[in-house]
Length: 90
Image (cartoon, rainbow, N blue to C red):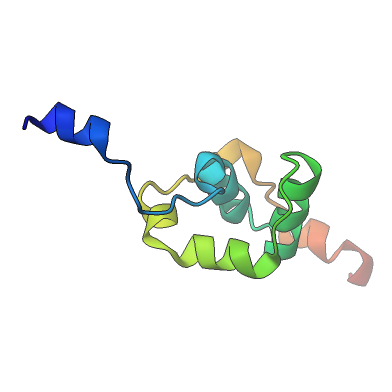
C-alpha cells in the first residue's frame, strides 16, 4: 500500500480548531492590545462564530496559535506623548 492510497482510505481523527482559519486575525488583535472579550465580540460580530471567551483563551494558549506570531505594524499602534496624556493635569 502506498502513502497516497493509505491517506485516501483513512481520514484524520485529530480535531482542528474552528478558530484556526482566523489565527492571524486573532493574533493581530492580541498584538494591538485588544482584550479577550473584545476578540470574542469580533469573532461573533464580524466572523459570525459563536464562541466563548474561555475558548478564545484556550486557543491562544495552544501550540496552534503560537506557530506563527503576527506583529502589529508600527503605524497601526497609536503613540501618545506624555504631554498629551496628562494635558488636563498640567
